[in-house]
Length: 378
Image (cartoon, rainbow, N blue to C red; front, side, top):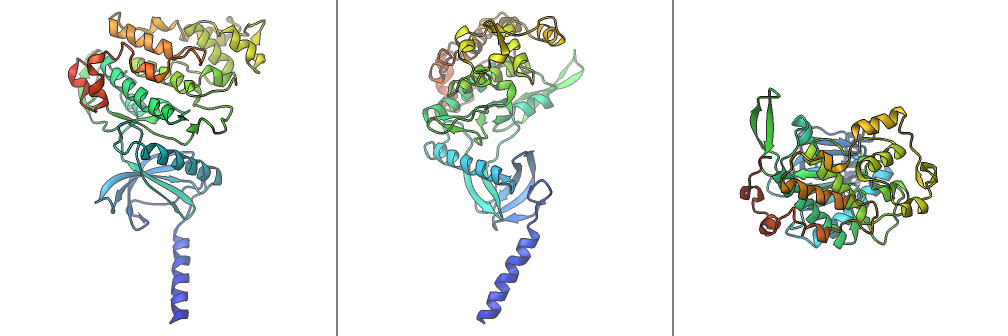
């Protein structure tokens, strides 16, 4: 009996190993209907990234609830990043069991034949994907207000937990539910969508860094990258605040504030929109190649110079209305886009900003329907 049992166990694991296959890129090959860990039944693909894929699954041990399962490629650097992300998620979820601080909840994690897998609460479209599917029609000021408040609350919680997210962008802010109403836009001859609820969660802690940990030189996705990161002056919590300023601008206008892929051009755009880079930062940076005689080395008359001049203008010229709440939003964005990290708004103060006029703050924090209290049309 012993030998036959041994043999059946061995052959069973061998056939399992044969059936668990990866594609050329290292993704786990799986189809709808496949079951992992005798628990997670795959329904469909939610998204794909360099790290792997996110699948919608039925979790048979959570009463058939739908979850998002992030399946990491069987590649060591992505596996290590996933281990770090799990560590961060365990810390932030443990201190916030009721999800008051709006960071995505991790339910479970496991190693499946070399693929790190993390299961999360199932969320809806990202604030970026919704914008894109809506022809880049911007969010209304009331919607921007509610989303901004939640992002500041969530990221303040991270900062209080001695963490910097480092990769905040509209793609990493997800709606809890992205159902929408539709109305016909007569001028544009198309249907415009309005999301019904602007409740959001912050996701993707794959690059989150503890205060006492090694800080890599370059962080953040280009368009949301703070000046101290570009100039390699060292970074901490304030680099997240800069990213939030860029995000709020994008929600309000429907396009990216710094649409560039080059450091020098990025700095030129900052100067056009926000004024000159402070001389202290110019003196201190190792990146002297971007400067000449204490000023940004930038040719206004080149084609890139023309591009920046035509596509960028001083921040307040982007206002869509002279109404007070619009000016308050820009006042908030301006204090988040302060060059000097030490002078940049801290998130504890951001929550007290006049843009979030005080009557409604408690309700937003308690998750009541903020939009119900005000006209969310622009």
